[in-house]
Image 1 (tube, helix red, strand yellow):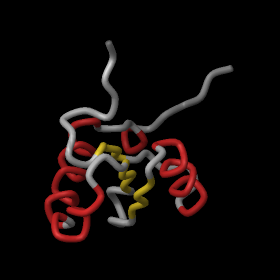
Image 2 (cartoon, rainbow, N blue to C red):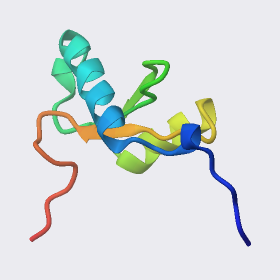
Image 3 (cartoon, rainbow, N blue to C red):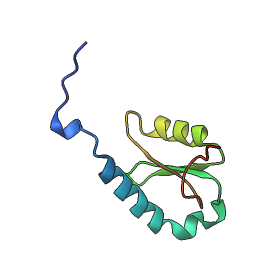
Image 4 (cartoon, one colour):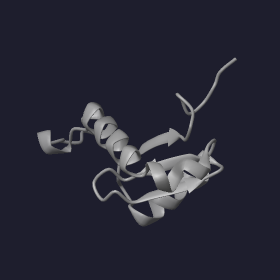
Length: 84
């Protein structure tokens, strides 16, 4: 199966990361009590979900914004997951 993709549909990872980090900065006061929780952000609308479980946060956002690409982070941590 071949799916034609236009240039407008190509996902720019750097743009998503940049927008996601900018939204996180603006939300600093609202999220300061959620250290260790996961945030999933729709970078186009600015809508977000915060949950203790990353899958729950993603599922919430997928229900509200189907077929979107999200920015995700673990609040207060440099990475979402730690591998030993």
